[in-house]
Image (cartoon, rainbow, N blue to C red):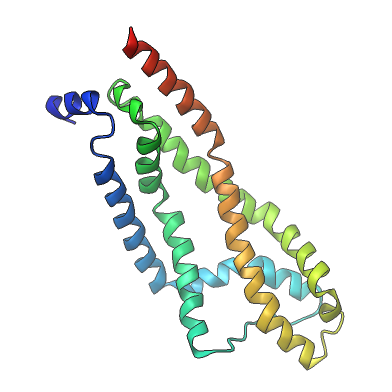
Amino acid sequence: MTGAASDALARNPRAGSGRRLSMAVLAFGIATVVCFMVWSPLMDVLLRPVCAALTEAGAECGMILLRLSDGFWLAARVALFGGFVLAFPVIAHGLWRLLFPSADRIVNGAFRPYLAASALLFWGGAALGFVFAVPPLIDAAQTALYGGLLAQPDDMAALLTLQAVAVPASLNWTMVLTLAFGLAAQLPVLWALMCRARHAETTGQR
């Protein structure tokens, strides 16, 4: 960042926020397009907790699409999920700068560790949630909601209902829960930035 740009940001902390948000939207769009091109293998990964629960119950894991448009919307949901996860560092950069404009007063370069920690905590929280928390939650939800169907793995009607209703719903919950764990891991960064921004504002008022 040049000296003139630093002075402009010091006078107007919100200067450049629109550009950062535009970059975040652009990064999200590009990442979503990339994930749309590989949505099928990405969906296979996301379905692992669901398929594990169905296999344990003796049912076949699969998905039935009832309408022609369902395939597109399924791919779009998976791509949006993957795009958000992939582009999160850029999204977080724009979001934190928007929420904490006084962070621009922090010594040049001191803001970068927060951005790195934000991305690592998000990815780490999402990964830990997907591996350790999502499978038992999905298993419990399927048992509570579709226990009667799971008890009839050889019944074709029950199997079709599971593949048409339970599997898509469980996939949606897998994506929501994974994102929730990743976003929950942002709390330490939020707390640290609030303290740092408060310190920067107090120092600037002296």
